[in-house]
Length: 49
Image 1 (cartoon, one colour):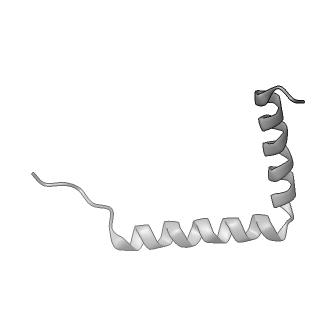
Image 2: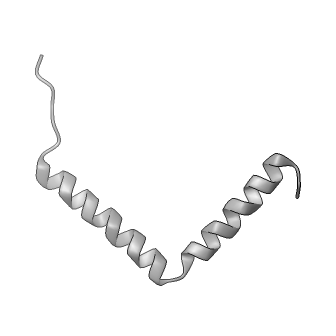
C-alpha cells in the first residue's frame, strides 16, 4: 500500500498561516465578538436565554 503524504513544506506553511490568521484576529479584537456569539448560542441551546 502506497499512501500519499502531504509534503512537510505544505504542512508547515498551513500551520504558519493558521497562527498568523489567529494573531491577526486577536489584534483586531475579534476574540470578544467570538466569545459573545458563543455565549449566545450556548444560552439558546440550553434554553436560559
